[in-house]
Image (cartoon, rainbow, N blue to C red; front, side, top):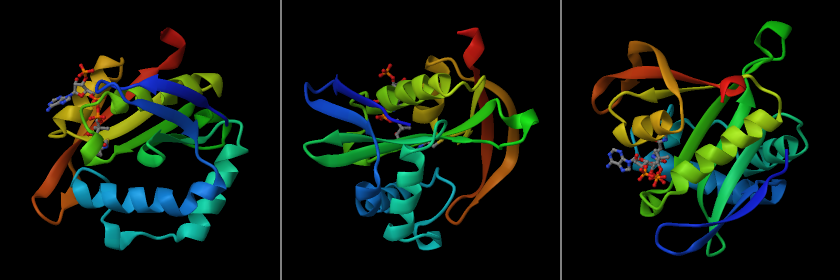
Length: 184
Ligand SMILES: CC(C)(COP(=O)(O)OP(=O)(O)OC[C@H]1O[C@@H](n2cnc3c(N)ncnc32)[C@H](O)[C@@H]1OP(=O)(O)O)[C@@H](O)C(=O)NCCC(=O)NCCS
C-alpha cells in the first residue's frame, strides 16, 4: 500500500508520514532494534531479532506492493522517528476481515503526537484495505499506549495475565483490543 502525508507535531516541527520502501530496510531495522532496547513492552528482545537488513528490505518492498498491508515511517529531519504498520491476520475467508496493528516511536520523540498520528494513519490504511476489524495486544501497564488506543476507539475484549514473561519483571498482563472499522 502507498501512503504519504505531511503533519505538524506538538513542538511545531514537521513530520512526513509515508510508507516504507525497500530502501528503508537498514534504517527500519536500526529503529526496530533501538525501540526494543528502550522499552520492555514489545514482543521481543533485540538479541532475538530473526532477520537482517536485506530480509527487512524485501519485506518492506513486498508491503509497498501489497493491496492490504503497509509499514509506515514517520520522518523527522530526514530520520525515522517511529514506525507503525498493519498486517493481515490470515488469508482464509473466515479471518480475511481482520488486521493486526503494531507501533513503535523512538523515546526521544514521545509526547509529540506522533503515536496518535501514526495510529490514525494506520486505521485509515486498514479501512482503505477493506478490513472490518483492527486488532492489537498491549501490556496492561503500558499506560501511554493503552490510553492512546482507547482514545482512538479501540475497545478491550480480554486479558491474558501471563501474556508476556519479561526477563526483568516476570509476567506481564496483555490486554487484547479491537476496533470495528465498519462502525465508525
Ligand atoms: C505508545 C507510543 C506509541 C506512544 O507514542 P507517542 O508519540 O508518545 O504518543 P502521543 O504523543 O501521540 O500521545 C498519545 C497519547 O498518549 C497518552 N499519554 C501521553 N503520555 C502519557 C503518560 N505519561 N501516561 C499516560 N498516557 C500518556 C495521551 O493520551 C496522549 O494523547 P494526547 O496527548 O494527544 O491526549 C510510544 O510511547 C511507544 O512507541 N512506546 C514504546 C513501544 C510501545 O509501547 N509500543 C506499543 C506496543 S502495544
